[in-house]
Length: 200
Length: 200
Picture 1 (spheres, helix red, strand yellow):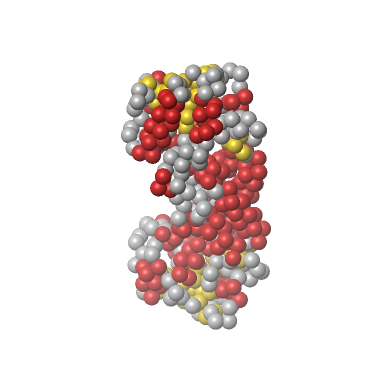
Picture 2: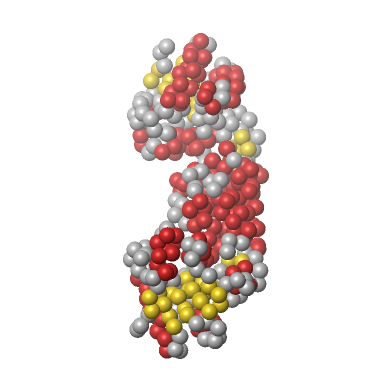
């Protein structure tokens, strides 16, 4: 006997979640069907809604329901500061420190020549235009402190320097080799305060 | 700044998955939206289909698309053997040993007086009627080897004995205190072979 087809298909679909293997997927599927069908409907609806309504901000690339995100549209943010992060979840982490009041640019990736991710793929042309708009006074590089994140920061820093812009990097309060998404907000707050000038 | 509402709702919905906390839920949501929107649609569709099409077999309670499941309807299974398990995933585990050819009865739970789960909630009236239909010659108790699973097996065993039926229990090849779902098929096959008579 095999499980009925819709159950097999659900188990296999749930493996699309990051880090979820066959055993966890099966556990999720059986749990929802046996104990929480309302939860299953809720998740299905939320997924549909999110895919339908969430797009990328035309200015900063983060997730938004509108053409331009709430942060970019806010009059209370300081437009002279531009913080560059790899992903929307990294941006959320910086926001949660409650210690940054500028704007953002989300790369939606990092330079990774081996995976074929070049400057165009992380929207560097748009970042450069934005940084050189005369309003931005300082670009804070908050890419991850991994090898690729550091290389991306170095690359962007050099480009911005060549245009005479002030560039800083989050202080190394963040443990080297770790991903921003998993660091506690206190540490990130500290690193924001101690950001250092990139002097090359 | 907060994440846009549909994203917050998705993160909160994903917490309905068993063992998924706020951090994992956020990781799932951002991953799907940034890297795998097709996967998000696939999961939503599979959830909807499964909830819509999967119900419980009228004879054994397991998951099925039909009135009666494939196993119960099969002419190649031995109807004189009835294996009692707690959940459909436990049944799947027994099936995966490829060493059992009888039928099943899925309790969809276990006795748990503290949680208010009594004999009615695990369909014991139907199990007793089924076991006494004259076709069943042996009832194999394959509830979990946890405290509640053992108590359930003991309770059911006593009831069946009182009706003069042959009752066996999976051999204790399965480590005490563990859940059937996480045991390897080889061990379960062994335990099936060495099942012992419950001699009250």
